Image (cartoon, rainbow, N blue to C red; front, side, top):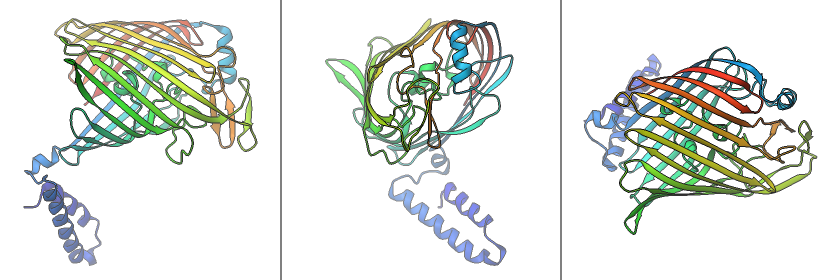
Length: 414
């Protein structure tokens, strides 16, 4: 018996065939269906029709915000720098006085065999520092070979396995209690490498009665600028990542982790903020990057804690940042009041050689990257298992943003 999947493929192909070739097309379709059936038999996947379709899963995430800001920029000098040399007309993840859509994120997962999984993810997003630009970003595209608890192998494009936010909450407003992804893990800044093209070994193991998780990866290094992924032809330094986390016994979801990365970055000397050079004639530079990300996550019956800290350096340029969030679980875990604090601290002066670089053709320009320091207080309510409504007040303590903001967000996921 042909599987439903094979019949659907054959039917779709026959619909595309011209009338004069219907008989020949039908024979080709039947042959293809038989080949698909034989292939699934070889891998032991020929089950009931629903069983095969259940191997394909589709998920999506989206959100809409309504915000208002007031009070003037916290630091007028920094705001003047941003207005003159920023990468966008507006700071990232600011709300103005109106509606904002973050875009929609689509994930497709296919169990190719019982232990090989393919996953792809595309984000149709609005550029968060402008008003009308729309982007299509490939987020993930990988094969995951799940061998044992101890050893699993991932290959392709995936979220860099560092920290917690970057692995689990990227483009996932529905999964977050608060509203915005920290600037530290915002891909339009890429202060840390948010994506990797390469391979990653991951798993869990027991040591002296304690359970640990780990990940070890190697991939293409950072590109000439922070915001460009090196999808191919990275002949120079490779990025190496490592993560170890302790699953604290006696708790369902209590993790203490340490992760880090290193890379050799090849780019060009640009100099001061506002300078531009031509990459065909500019002097090349090569600098070593080191980064460390300790983190703690606890998700309990009454409250939740998420704390993450970043310390990294490129050459002699140091970057620090962190995020801390405490939330409560009320009303049968449907209502979650929370408080949160985020900060980023870039190198002083011209912010180092790398973080502000952006490339346009062969023109490489150093832009001003605003720092972030803000406290947030808010509450969210789960309207349904797939819909979360949030209200948040933001008080900025430093940087280019308005002193105050209030934001309402509705986020979906399925």
